Length: 91
Image (tube, rainbow, N blue to C red; front, side, top):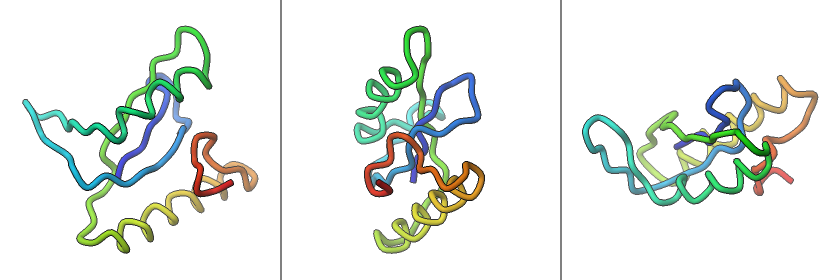
């Protein structure tokens, strides 16, 4: 489970699931969340740097989907029912 977000903000662009994280020098690497960085930066505009971080590990895909849904619902509760702007499964 990962979260993509503007580096200098508490906002969230999207939550996602990836089955392949590699830890290199203490830093998580994965192609799936990295692919969302460009879209996040385009959404927030010039000068904004988006990053991603691991937010949870789940033993199965179904467990990961439940965690993702919970994170989205929490976001909605804190943001007047709105979805994270880059969350396709929430629109």
